[in-house]
Image 1: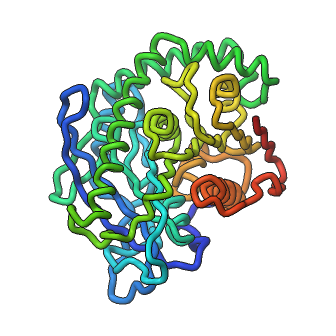
Image 2: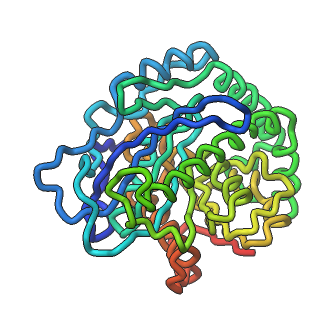
Length: 378
């Protein structure tokens, strides 16, 4: 297994800055939530700016402590000192009056910096990408140094959902690696998503979508200058917002699209659509996924009137739809394809999808032709 000490060079013309802001609000369930947000944005010069560290050193100890309580072994998912290729707090690029905005959601049990690869690539191409840390279901270090850790309740519910999903999947083991036909995939996906623990676990995605909507509110105020920042008047919000995420973050993206009209399209990076059974997202929605995620999400073909696109990548591992594509140190987190090739496929489709449906730039997604990739549009 080849290992990397840094992410590849960003795809776009801009250099990339990163800044962090924290927010606190009362959620609809009356809980107080502290949400951190990392802004990845286009810059013209990084002169004199320090390189952004990947993540804080306490992360693994905190995560391993909670994983042990649910019977999972310690797991180092990145090396200390991994190079991000972005820089702390340089000025926003002056090349454009304003930039379009995307919001990213991390996977269950991870951290907001785990969206660095794709957020950074999109920022280099002219977007402002905001990666949100979801309290309780991820680990985040706030700007004042305090750490908001995973909750035992979340980890316990995740473990129960995992057992239920594993039982349903192992009853049909072929769905792990073999794409099923449309009717069979819809049947399997409806069964998985309607299962009791899946329904129970989906409430966390609902709550995370409230985090996203709250941050969208803050973006409005930042753009208006009510919240001081470098982004005053520089956010192209009048065209709407895009949202994407990996794994459970993809679930969150779907619910956000369904429930908030400001979000005009969304991308799921290999997540399950918990909480979306019989939902009409009413927006264009793309799944970049493994065969398993096609088999467990196909029910959206019946309910989403906004248009669905499934891009199934053979030989990819679930974790490779995140930063683990380059940060992973375990063979089990890697598939059979070259990481650079997978990155090229994922970022090409993601950038094109947001270009077509958010920027309305006329991108022809159907013209792409990658080996070992099947595209299904309905």
